[in-house]
Length: 313
Image 1 (cartoon, rainbow, N blue to C red):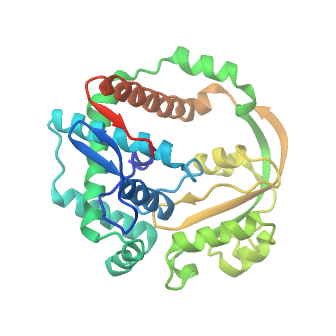
Image 2: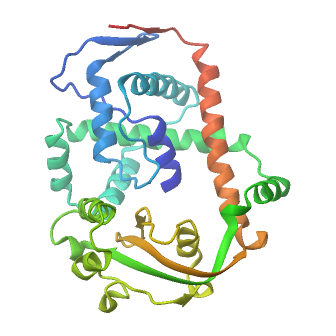
């Protein structure tokens, strides 16, 4: 669900809030209007990460033209969802919002306050969540059945990208685990953004671990020491293998609402990881790529069935 919702939010993040901006019409899609307000409000959702996603690939700084194209696709997508008789009950919206609150360690009051600061009402937020859930159902119903990953696809990707599959027998890393206790009343997401920014600016990672971390190595300032890579859980190992020594990882959320940040210190005794050990990560990577491509192709085809007028200023 996490990956699917991120994929959706990459393509389509919008709301219909009537914030105080110059509300000129920028495009028409059939009988629906896209205004400058819609573009600004979509950017608010993107910048504030209000749908609960964490990803190093989340688009930032999207210009007006690119955002407008996304909003055109948004309208077309919603019409295709309606054609496929997909509807989301309010109970599913409630559950999704509760998941976001748990992930961010927020209360409903704190969420409403964060929305209000951006000029977005709670009702508008609920409508946006409902739309995102509808898009997820659409992907499951229409897009995923078009995708088939074969063993040949896995082997072909493996052979063509050998540098991606270098492993190490021993690894040393620093870790910071941020929890509600670390945040002390703030949201864990806010604290993560602060700590990650400080680490990337060159602040001492171990000092940050000593101050904020609640992880297993807190008594060693976050230092794992040199450990056998085979002793680490697969999702952590895959993340660490993606880093170079000295590099800081993207945030890694965990089910209890905490967030890990890692820094790779050293990696010893390289070897090529066997395909049998990494089939599933490769399969998921290919699925993500193809879902994105299939959705883009589907919507490009669907555009031909709609009247679209872009009004340049």
